[in-house]
Each structure stands twice: as structure tokens, then as C-alpha cells.
Length: 410
Image 1 (cartoon, rainbow, N blue to C red):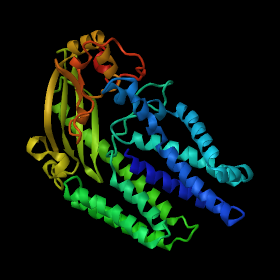
Image 2 (cartoon, one colour; image 1 turned 30 degrees about the vertical axis):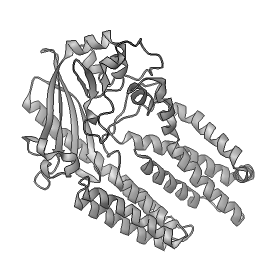
Image 3 (spheres, helix red, strand yellow; image 1 turned 120 degrees about the vertical axis):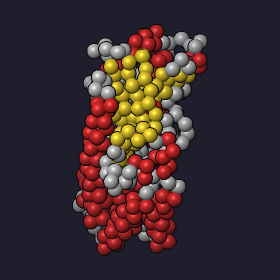
Image 4 (cartoon, rainbow, N blue to C red; image 1 turned 135 degrees about the horizontal axis):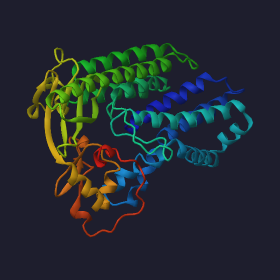
């Protein structure tokens, strides 16, 4: 997820935990504990993304692909990260250190904030199609939620609005609330959000603002409602993702009964459970081929045809209707034997395949077509010429191959 989503979710969790614990014996301690829990949860909720400092261990693009969402995004390595963060906070914040030493409630709040922040980071990163491998080294497989867009305004509004209303300064409170509404409005005018989605976000923001306004300094209603909205949204997205996969799998099997559908990477449209971008992988072992397709699924084509999905992500001009509610952007076919031979002969490609979920390969390059429409271009592209004179690399993590099913004869 984006770090704004991580931040507002973690801050909301820290505030809710603070308000759920008994008050400290005096007001200054209460204020210190409040700040400590907010800061701790916020830092823990973003700390795993410091793995970006590890990306220089491998040349581009492998450094980013294999080290971002790497070891710092595992349950096992959350413990040393938490210990490091706790040590830094206690060393640099003497007042918080003294409070934690003398107050059992503050110690509990500190530990809960730390654990919640790290847990929220892993859970939120799991929700999208990029993937994580949280149980490494016990289980090196990538896990993909395929449920939520990687920049999700529902989280911004759900968690951000109660937080904005908690700010004591009226002018700052109004400014933050206006920004929370204004940013989705901007993306709507740019074609990334549909107007019904924006209307739903606006309605949710108004409800949360009204509820939070009624809360006192210890009230939890607004925060509890924010988590209820977020969980309900994730539940809806889960069901919609499964529906889109069922529709797509049926269409793929009908189009070519001889093929085996291996995977369907689903990327949600922001704040929109009806529209889904997909990248699919099929194989035909007998023919020695594999197929890749990109396109869009609308799970309610009578209500929102695929061509009516938000324009900035739908690429209506490139759509080729394939079935009701399903349109293709592109399709290609590869040689299974050539793919396996390249993996065995090219150690850099072998390392790249530890990340690639939907690998498109030609004589010049390999690219994961999940990211074919990102604003900065496809950051996953490995150009073979860039590695022609390089020896095999060290510091390659032992993640499982997402496409082990293509690399290994059935």
C-alpha cells in the first residue's frame, strides 16, 4: 500500500488503543502516552518500507524487485525491527522512557502500538496484487490478496477523517478535512475515480465527521466506525475479486479448452468494486506454449460496461470485447521450452523469475505485465543487454518462484 494509507491506518489504530486503555494518573503522563502511542504505531506502520535502502545490493531492476517487500515484510524479521525501533524511541525520548518504566499501562500501550503497526503494514500490503511472503523462511511463497488498489482513497477517508477532526486547531482541522476530500476529487476529474465512487467517499467522510464531532476526548465511536468501514470495504472487495476471477476463468476456458489457467492477477480500480484490471497466465504443456492476457473485467456489465470503467485506467481505445463484462488489452503466446532453457542458462533471469508473476519474455527483455500501465513505466523490465557482461549475482533472496508452474514440466 501507499505510505499515506499505512500512516493514517496506523495513527487511527494508535489513537483507538490509547482511548481504550485506562487513563494515566496525571494529565502530563496522559499526554505523553498519547503521543508515544501515536508515534510508535505510525513508525511501526511504515518501518518495513525502509527496505528500500537495501535495493542497491542488486543492480536495477532486481534490487527493487527482490529487496522491496523483502525480509522486512516477514513475520520473523518483524521482531528485530520492533526491538530496534523501541531502542531508538527510548533512547531519543527520555520523557517517554521514564513513563514506560513506571507505568504498566503505558508499557502495555507501547507494546500494543508497536505490534499493531507492524501487523497493519503486512496485512495492508497483502491486500493488493504486488504480493508479500510473510512466512519466509518457513514458507518462501509469495501471497497475493488481489483485493485493493495500491493507492486506495477509501483508507485515506476512513482513517483520515476522524484523525483530522481530532486536531485541536480549528483552521488546521478544516484544512485537513478539505484535503482529504479534495485529493479524491482531483483524481476523479483526472479519470482515475468514477463520480459514483467519489460520491460514496464524500458520504463516508461526512458520516465519519459527524460521528467524530460527537466524541469527547476519550470517545471511540468515530475510530471504531472508521475500522468498520475499512473492514467492510475489504470484505466487499474480496467477494468482488472472487467474482471477477470466476468470470474470467470461465471465459478463458471457453476460449481455449485445451489450456490450463494457472493464475489471474486482479488489480482493483480505486474505490470501485465493479471494475478490475487483470493479467492472466495459461499453459498448454502438450503444445509447449503458455499464454498471457491483459484486460478488464466488470462484474456488473449491465450497470457498468468495461468501457465505462474510469478512463485513466480502462484504456477504452485499446479494449477488444471478449465476453460480456470482459475486454482484452493484449494477448501473447510464449514458448515453454525456451522459457525454461533461458531460466537454466541465464542466472540473472533466474533471479528475476523469483519476482515475476506474469512474465512476458522476448529476445531483448523480460517484463512482468502486471505493471504495464504504471505512470512511471514498467519498473519490472529486465533488459538482457544490461547484464550481458555481468557475472552471477550474490545477495539474491531465496523467494519461491511465483511461476514455478511454468518453469517445471507438469
